[in-house]
Image (cartoon, rainbow, N blue to C red):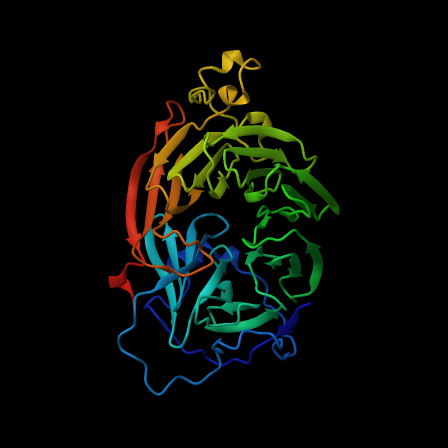
Length: 434
């Protein structure tokens, strides 16, 4: 059960860079369509009795003195926004927003007291974000979702729960909150609860939502190992797919919600399903050894699928034309034939094990094995954006910042092979700390 609260218009104690708005004036003029209707206020409610007592309210007065020297930031969270044009980093002192092309830090909030932010969910490029406290000294209790309006420089509302929030997903019309074994779907404007979903234990907070102009499609773990649940809200239909024999490790939706890519804890195969009827459309092979899949991403036209894992290689797979989402998949030009991704031994399919007839990646980019990488497709044609994290503890605990890396690479859809690195940057470096 969740409770709702709204804050009075009181400034929070934060430090920010010179860019006081979420976007530059030029960016804002280009993204006016990203704005959403104003949210309605709600009567205040007392925090849950089991809330973490070690949080710092944004309404407290500033301390008498603030230390001039602060230890370098530690990373708590990293994620792309809905169109992969930006990404957000939550640290033990606040959060930062970066643009992907060109790469630059466009915004930051550093809190004077506490400040740990364990979840930062952007809403495209607008001024609204969802924040959840995290780390050893959280800015907000980790059982609350704080709706932050950066135009007002304050939290304008909150959703409070009886257990920790694992993740948040935003659409222009919905807020989706993921707990360990339950998911709540809210209307964005008035925070009205629309749906509750029970799931199997979901410590990673796995959940994906469509971002197209059509109705919401939501994917989450089912109630059985290896099962995913697909909610089609327009047709009010629920589809269960037994995607894998092992537990689900990662999944991703195409923007229109019609294609679903899944990977299990085994990490050797990735399967692509039609979310409408649950049929298996394609199966591609990352490798033969077990691996932890960190992220999956469709290109905007659902022609390509990118995969990252702890093996240190980012793979790009070609998706079949028949598997494309109607109305979004663009037919490949005859002047750009795609390199064959089948094993050279596929002629003996049915004689030797399935491994030899597997579909392999078209392009690869090799990085340091053991580090974590998040992957997305860039806005330029045939480009991939990779966020690298040096640290092996996982994003649900603090990673001491040694280096966070940004890569932009280009792949050849005709000849395949190794991707070409176009751009590389370090971010969240100690010398850049506040």
